[in-house]
Length: 210
Image (cartoon, rainbow, N blue to C red):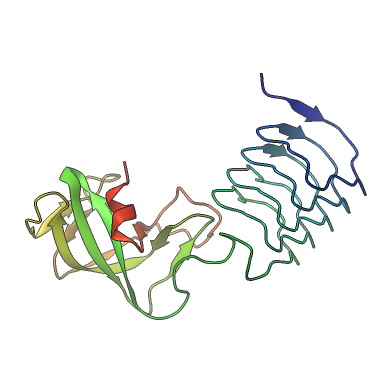
């Protein structure tokens, strides 16, 4: 049974290094609390307040922080991998170069290559142009609004193809040498499963997509 903590006032609390793996927090006030190196792996936070909280080196991997208040919280060194931050208040949040999976994973400027997996185990090599909108949330998958199809290859046989069909939309076709456009691109980087051309920077990661 999942442990649940509800309507708790932990303002200014000292919780350094505590282990709260897979705990559900509902309307808990963590404002100004010292949570350095605390483990919140796979925790669910509902309407929780982390205003001014010290979250240095916290493990938020897999945590659901949607709608929470992290105003002026310090996440320096924290692990945000696969955390969900949609509709969270991130104003004046403090991070540093050691904060994992909080900054954009894909290049913010310039052109670069990406890879995606389509039906029948076809791997599409994409050129994301310099003027394309691009974004990523808290993992290694990325999205863009347009890309040029450079190559289509069977991941097992190495055979090349001229077309590939998207997993999500059978009418979205990738054709070698042509640009593809996502009219439904959502610029909100914290919404991960949403409109856009999804891709990875590493081909092996694209091949592992199920």
